[in-house]
Each structure stands twice: as structure tokens, then as C-alpha cells.
Amino acid sequence: MADPGVTGKQSPARRRQEDRSRAMRRRLIDATLSCLETEGYAGTTISRIVARARVSRGAHVHHFPSKAALIEAAARHLVRRVYIQLGEAFVNLADSDDRLRTMVFSSWRTVFCAREHAMLLELLLASRHDEELAVIMERLWTSGYELIRGAAEHYFEPLDESADPVPLVVLSQWLLRSMVLDRHLVRDERMLEQHLDLWCDLLATRIRPRPGVTGPPPRPPESVWGE
Image 1 (cartoon, rainbow, N blue to C red):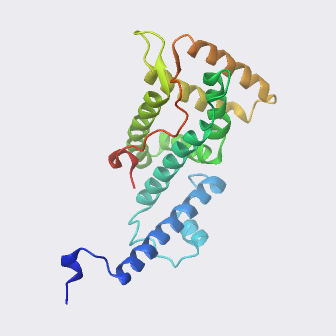
Image 2 (image 1 turned 90 degrees about the vertical axis):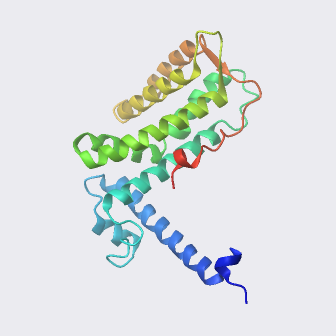
Image 3 (image 1 turned 180 degrees about the vertical axis):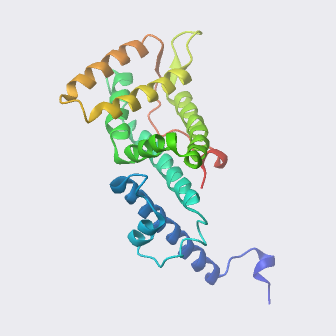
């Protein structure tokens, strides 16, 4: 009889175990994100995560040995989701008369105003006063920068040799993120959109969307994408 370990084929029992493990990890990550959304970072405790996931206390240890490991996995899941949202925001924009403006506004509404981005902001703000979380978010920021670089080079091209789409797209992200922080204080959403219009006018003097590129950005390497 052939040895499954020699042939490289995975037994049905092993596949079922991996499926259960994957499902448990996703269950715990979803519960962590739910807690972040409703309780904030300070209120996202292991006890609340376990209760929300409806698993036995200690069930998480095999998959995530610490709260930090669970938070990092949840944060990476958020980054992946935001990156996917970015691709979805840019689908079918080829017919727009002003693609750059449409892309910026679509990013604002689909990505930066989404619940996933709000949870990332919660972690970013909390990391200012939590050294362990700051280490996690620094790693995530580095990965996120590589994702932005790839998206910028995929979607945009310079208008002249002195322009570089990457820092301009990074700056756009910082601008939109700052606007999101003030959004709940602004009574008239049109005020924010007026400033977005101004930013689009400035961007249009330096970069433009690549002709015909409307699909999602390429999947980044596993070293950036994470688990």
C-alpha cells in the first residue's frame, strides 16, 4: 500500500482537519473584528472574543497563542479586504469622462467610508498608546505601503518625467484617511467632496489613469499579503 506521506496526497481526514482549523480561525477573526467595531480596541478582550465566537475558553490558543497574534491576523484580514474593495471600486470605470476624479471619489465612498476602514483606524489610533500594538501596526503599515505601491503603478502613469504616481497615491491615502477622522463632525458631506474635487484638480496636473486599465490590481506576493 502506498504511503500517503510519500505520494504527497492528502488524506480525507487531514483535509477535514485543515478545513475545521481554517473555519475556527475565521470564526475567531470575525469575532475579533465584530468586537473592534462595537467595543473598540480597549474593549476587545479575549473573553469577549471567545464569547462572541461562541467557542470554549481556551479554544483559540491552538490557532492564536496570544491576543496580539489574533489582533494581527484580524488586521491583516482587514488590509486584504480593503485591497479587494479598492479593486472593486475601480471596476468598469473605463467609460467615465474623468476617470481620475471618478477613481478618487469611488475610493472615498467604497473604501475609506467602509466599516473595514473604520476598524483599521481604531487599531491605528490605539497603537499610539500601546507598544505591542504599535509593533503589529508598523509591520502592517510596511505591508500596506507595498500594496499601495503596486496599486499606484498598476492604475496610474506620470504626465511627465518629474512625476511619480506612488508618492502621490500614498499622499492621497493619507488625505482621505484624515478626512474620514473628521467626517462624523461635518454636517454637510458636500464640504468634504468639494475638497476632494480640489485634490483631484491638483492630481490631474501630475498623473493620469493608465488607458484601458480597469481591472483589479495584481495579487501581491505572499510575503506582503500575509496569511
